[in-house]
Length: 292
Ligand SMILES: Nc1nc2c(c(=O)[nH]1)N[C@@H](CN(C=O)c1ccc(C(=O)N[C@@H](CCC(=O)O)C(=O)O)cc1)CN2
Image (cartoon, rainbow, N blue to C red):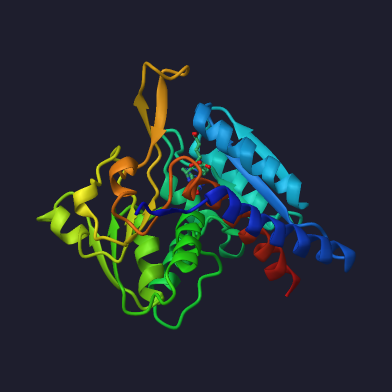
């Protein structure tokens, strides 16, 4: 039997509809529309496209977005000045600095400057630190990990006690998703490039989150029959038969793994759309924080 395919677009639509209704109720109650500031530095085409999608999705749910674009040559001081101004702007409830930043900029310093209460990406070390601490609540949870958890919650009746394996330990996905799984009382193993007997470790997973950035690395015989597999990878591979000359694949070999897993998220159309939906939800949350 082949796996159930998790439709990220449909799940994201569910979240967006909820955000849209809550924004409308907020406005009907005389409160201002939530405001999202997007900061794009440079001309990376993928980043430009993600920021465009985020602003379009914001407009669709009634969130006002303010787009800031700086040239690839912008200095550290210029980027920091902009973030400081946005921190002080009452119309802005969320600040999103699109990553990656050009190589000459100190990403950590920029992210650390974002107000904790406007950190809709959830990358500020205080928010990540709170995520890692028992009994502490971050103001925001990073969007892609939150999207993964939403998909896992839809697929697993009880997360408590399950074996979860996270492949990858990045600041944006691997580490925060592992922390979220621990908070949900899963038993979590984080795998990386030095993990020994990787296929054997992955085969223990009731839930596998693949976020390693290696095209189709996870093979069918690495996966426990019936497992829930969440594929976070977005990799471009050459494909002369495609009109674009390439196609997008995840970190999981979809054709092999779908024959073994119980549930699987595809690429594209899986976790990707959840990232933007969660950003909208976080921006609304930012507006609610500012009401207090
Ligand atoms: N400040 C941030 N920067 C980056 C983040 C982030 O969450 N915050 N994540 C990624 C990029 N990203 C959003 O910014 C993102 C990536 C992919 C998708 C998406 O919907 N992907 C589609 C496929 C798109 C394609 O074909 O190219 C899918 O998976 O269906 C949305 C958002 C890095 N930077």
